[in-house]
Image 1: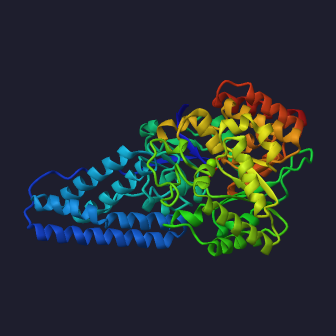
Image 2: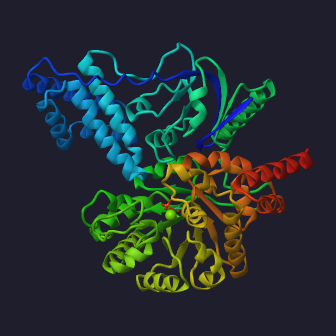
Image 3: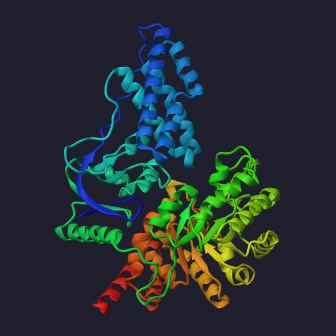
Length: 557
Ligand code: PEP
Ligand code: MG
């Protein structure tokens, strides 16, 4: 048995024979063209247009997030700057194939040099180039193999065009050697609930036909597994399938302690699905969606309509809206205009809103009006709060607008360490484990090269969460979790053991978390949390919690 490590997407586990994605087309030779520059230009223009239309067509067929991605890729293909670069090379006498290859490669290098989100778009650009070159040569574009039976797809990185139309009855899991947690492979795997491990560098060793286990929860691909490994993986897959079809009940521990399970939403249109999957309310409504594609802030009326739409889906239920979290990975031209060397440590979240207070005031106005017009129980919180003074500022401002329940997100270690003082002023705290992990481990959450640090199981992160949990208990105030950590079923048990009173997650994670909470009482959850806290690093904390959780099950038998 050999284990290959990467970044797991989601919680699934799957097994099956490997089928590798075809290698990219060989690079075109730098030979002089026998055609005139006009002829080359027109061949390339036809090929580019055909590729762009094909990408749009695939997008329309796939719908959802895939459509946006493919349309963006089609625009990339027809980008006028890129066209100029290709034309300039053709004017020097290069062939169309070589001009496309070379111009796209130089753009790719620029994106890679920028790194982060843009760096991960480099794969999209490569895919466009391959498709155009294949068309110019009259050969099929490299794509997903079809071995005639279900398979584990192993690739360097998947282009959005490939993931969008994957036949989910055939693809048991995805493994890529490149790509980080924010690559398109990761985003689309999440959306389609495909078991995936990305950035598994050593997966180049896997051969067609060999059986592997892909464990997304652990971020591990097991080559050459034993019969016992295969049986264990199958049991886990069966347990997940059973959780998915179990009756939907309110979140609770085995001893009946309620743990409301809430949804993380970024768009009011997703509310209906969340309700269907049993969300008992919303623990994090990311309001950025209204602002991100805009060149200026939406009006109070536009915002009010969107908030009313969301709140109407949850009559009598709690809905926690977060005021705009701009900056760092979500820059907005009208809020974050100054260049910052280190934007994650700059003017983001509440800091940015405070610098443009009119935007914050308008948002609070729209939220308060939507609250008055609907039956939901609206709570409002501020992102990226790092001091007691910021807490006082936000709570006072929210009260001015009649917001009844005003709280703060704990995403920065300073807020966790002073949670007692913060909770003396705020009505509730909600821990954003994505940023809390980023800031505790000093590892950019978008950077594939430091992805291994971005693990909320790290005992340093757990200790900070315990601080907040204890402060909440002492003050009698709710402490929610709304980062990705709440979607990891065993970590969810640990978080409750550390004092979390509600858990909020992507709706697709609710069933797994609901099923796992039902296996442990509060005392067990505290004991499992202690075991994780006593570990030295994230990997051993996870193992310690698994072992502690297994003893609960033994004593129950
Ligand atoms: C977090 O940081 O954990 C969080 C929930 O906020 P976001 O992911 O939107 O930054
Ligand atoms: Mg955050």
